[in-house]
Length: 356
Image (cartoon, rainbow, N blue to C red):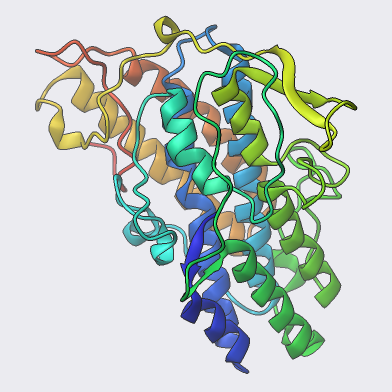
C-alpha cells in the first residue's frame, strides 16, 4: 500500500480552514494524474493487435484514473476551489517520486510493459491496505506478493489521506460548498451516473471520494468495487499471474487466479527506450520530431482538461477525445527505431505548450 507522510494527513485533520482542504484536493488531482503517463507508456508499448488481454486491463485502469481525477476536481470546485492543471509543475518528473513524496523510495518511470514492471511498480501503487489472500491455481510466473506491512511510524496510507478529507468535509459542513454548481463536470457518455455525478453536498463529496478509494483498493472482503468490476490491484495481478481472477467457491476468499489465460508475449511488445527525454533523440531525427508532437498533444490534453474543470464542463467529451489523438501519435512514435540502437522511441510526457 502507498504510504504518505503522516503530517500531511494530520494537517488536514487539524485544520479549520477550507483553504487547506482545497490545497489537499489539488494534491489529490495531481496524484490521480501522476500514474497515468506510466500506465499509458506500458499500454502504448503493446503492438497493435497483440496481447489484447493485458491491453484491455491497462486501458480500463487508465479510464478509471481519469474518472478519479475528475471526481477530485469536482469536489475541489464544489468547495470554491479551482483545479490547476495546465502548467509545467503539474507533470511529475519521470523517473521519480509520486506527488507529495508518496511512498518514499518508490520510483515511477516510463517503461515498456513487463510482468516485472506491473509487479514491482503498478501493484505497489494500487496495493490495498487490507489485501485479500487469493491463490494462483496455475503455474506461477512471479513470486507471491508479500502481505503488506502496516505503515511505518510517521506514515499513513492514501486511503487515510482521502478519509481525512472526507472527515474534514463532514466536520466543516455544508457551509463550505460555495462553488458554482455550473462548474460540475458530468458526462455519462464516458462514466456512468453512479460514478460521476455533481458534487453539491457533504454526502455527494463523501460518495465521490469513496469511489476513488474503492476502485483502487476494493474492500476488505472483496477484490471488487461494490457493484462493479475488480479493483486496480487485482486487475494488474491478472497480468502478473497470467490468469483472470474468477469466482471460486472452494477458496476462503471466494476467488482464485484460475480463469482464462492472460498471456504476455514479449514479441508483441515494442522494446522502448526506458525513461526517455526528448533530448535523447538526435536533432532532426524522426524520433525527435514525433516525441515533440506527442508532447504537444499531451499538453493540449492537459490544457483542455484545465478548461473543462474551470468553467466549461461541457468540454469533457472533446477533452477526453484528445486521448484518441494521443494514441495515434504514440503509435507512430513507438514504432520508430532509434538510430544507432536496437530500441524504439518512447513517449516522454514533457510539457510542450507550442508545436515545434
